[in-house]
Image (cartoon, rainbow, N blue to C red; front, side):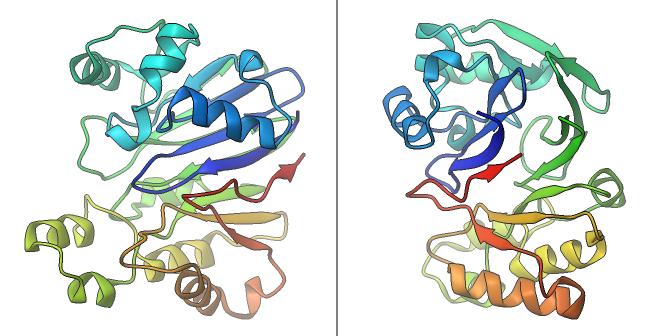
Length: 257
């Protein structure tokens, strides 16, 4: 099925479906095999048709499902070399890796994938732009700061999946330890609602069709808070742009190509 759909987004597990004319992949695999299969069934996709899993970085909420999906189901894993090493060290398993180089575009079937560096507390974390069926999709979460590189890579996307993780005042007010607060708010942590809105305001262009706000903190954010801040930052320029939440506990809005 052609399209793009968040299956789960947040600290309890991340997974996205992307389908083109000829190819079906998952982006990250933070859910178990059974849960992934159930969520794919909700959008009419059979897990047996998934051809690869594209991995952004080695944190558990992005790779937890690899043991079952990559080893038992034998789905190839697309990752850079340092992330592949970290996956092996963390899970004590070695799936069928297809290694890409950060910063270099590669082709998988009919997808043109460009992995680029982001600032996050992982070994070699990346975000992606993916060209499929003449469309450009930007997938960018788990970063504490939107660098010039990030902004340049995400230009001219038709669809964006951007982190809107937290509201800083809610982080400061929460009962979590200071080390957690410093990590989330730091330049290698997670993108705030305001920073997401500012980034999006810089990326707006007439061909941008839809935005998913992703990786929302369940403790230090809410869908209403994120949407209000992002729309405020976009202002009149983004008044008619559809913006939806990628949820942790349910399948998000399916975008048909």
